[in-house]
Image 1 (cartoon, helix red, strand yellow):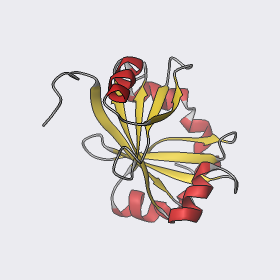
Image 2: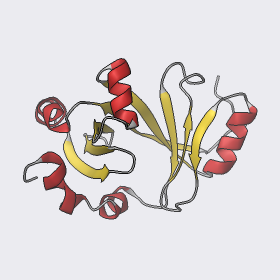
Image 3: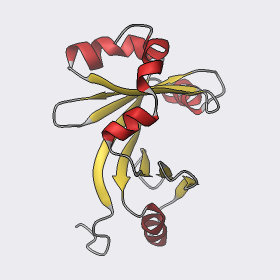
Image 4: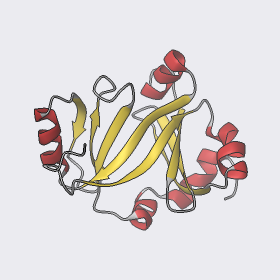
Length: 164
């Protein structure tokens, strides 16, 4: 039963992230066959990965993760598990307060980062989430603002190797 002492924190399930060897190789399924429209994309060289989000009718999104180097978390995930679901992201309100409450209920939370007001995040460990990483994120940006902030237009060519 839903814990009614935690009302209003979760806004929506924002996206499901899938680790792939190459984003370009996943597009025939997720874009061409299933009808996803390219929404945002970005290279994260310090973390060793790139990502591209596709949005579907109704607003749900899939995020494709591709390793940029062999020592990053996406490369390690692919080496250990192969291609597949990496995490789910829930957009939330008052993330720090919410994380405090879920920790008090015994969930293991890792990699908290509240330093950027445009994107605060924390991750519920797979040990506490039935084998799946759950990302909690709070942002002051709407979907259009995220698209502008991530610089989608200038990176689409580099990431996907094509005009979009």
